Image 1 (cartoon, rainbow over the protein chains, first blue to last red):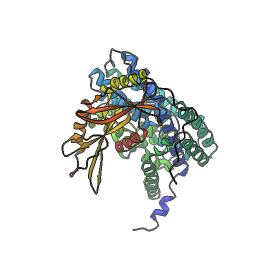
Image 2 (cartoon, each protein chain N blue to C red; image 1 turned 90 degrees about the horizontal axis):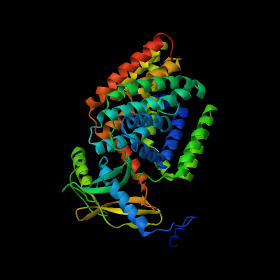
Image 3 (cartoon, helix red, strand yellow; image 1 turned 30 degrees about the vertical axis):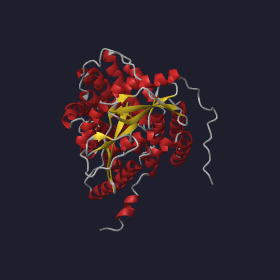
Image 4 (cartoon, one colour; image 1 turned 135 degrees about the vertical axis):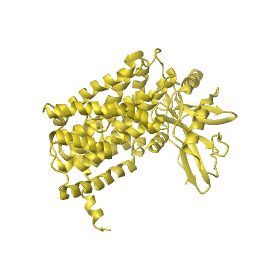
Amino acid sequence: MDPGFLFRSARYVNLEAISLILSFMLVSKLMDVSGLFSKVSAWILSVEGRKRVFLILLASELVAAVLMNDTALFLLVPLVVTLHRMTGRDPSDMLVLVTIGANVGSALTPFGNPQNIIIWSHFHLPLGSILRVTIPFFALSTVLLILFSSILPDAGEKPTRIVSIRLDPIPAVSAALLLTVNLVLASYGHYLVGVAVTVLSSLLVRREAIRGIDVPLLAIFVLLFMDFGQLSHILGSMGVVPPLEGVTALASSALLSQVISNVPATITLLNHTADWRSLLVGVNLGGTGLVVGSMANFITLRMADLKLDRFHRISVPYFLASMALFLLLAWIRIYP
Amino acid sequence: MPPPIRIRGPWGSPPISREEAERAIEAVREILPLLTAGPALIRGGPDGWHVDIPLMYQGYALDRIHLDTDTMEPSPKGRPPRSSREADPSVVRGRAEEIVGELRVLDATEYREPERCWAVPLAWGPYLVAHVRVSSDGKEVVPDYGLTEEVRRYVY
């Protein structure tokens, strides 16, 4: 037993990333309790046929980009299940595509998922630089997702009227304002001020948002930093991991995500590469494929009681196709 | 020192009408086929096992139904059962979906002034087992956000 282990591990915790995750978690909760998304769902369900499938996939991407991928799935999985229950069809394939959509969409913004937040804060990146990498990733992945969605039948013939959740505009407006404030403060490095402003505002606007903070999940992120930060240090001191860049950085981060999930993969490889662009694309690619790639995948599995083989039947071919595409682009040095 | 009386908000309480009450009941009838059972919330305590089934709509929890795992039947609201044996989540899940499918909307509602909403009762057999809250105009459903968070943590 090494008594100094705990103290050394604590040094690996990125407080900036943890405070950003907390701030964006709260913003997401405020938006969630406003009921705004329910209005969007009601509108989506009123649209007919194939257009409805595209709208659901687009909604999974855009909601994840703003509210983080896990919240998007908590909102969209029940919508898909409800829709398929009304039309009497099996929702499995649609659920997998929605999960891929949430992972892809969350890659669009620096605050859409934990791995983006970690890379954003670790490399102190300006918003413009990160968006120049994430927008092409989002666009190409969306095209691929739409191609994959051609396997799905029409969503249904009859437009559906849905009773929506009560809309409360105050939390929605507050969330939009706090999102802007956090982005500005983070770009100047005032992460802790951002958390303080967000917590106080949430207390004033809707206390449910504060109660909605997932403390165990935050603790898991702290432990991930400690464990995988230490692992990264050990691997570095043993000389096992050479400095990564370009195709190797992209491939190793995507493949490592398939084994240990994308947030641990990000933390492990963070200090082994200066090529943050390839790391960012790699860990976001690695969120699809095997279920372990992203924690968000488990939400769909558990909420919809989806079988693992049904999930992998679509998710793995999607991962292989997108991996081939982005490796080719990296190899011919077009992107990232 | 007696407890203070709750002060009404600056805008007071909105006027209510019979039509709005009827609209609220109708809204719950409309959503009834779309209600699903969330993951069973199973807790062990010194007095036995408590199992609650969250009633879900569009990803939000509306209320919880107490389940007696000895009889695998719901227990009336206000009387959470204490079962002697631990429940199997997969068995509870299957039964929970059946119970949600057997719910019916009662033809009357109560108004909850502090929350500014109607509480429309749902019944299973002879028992009143849950309420669905509907906005005072009878048009929108009001979720239980605290319960929603509890359910989401169970999913993780």
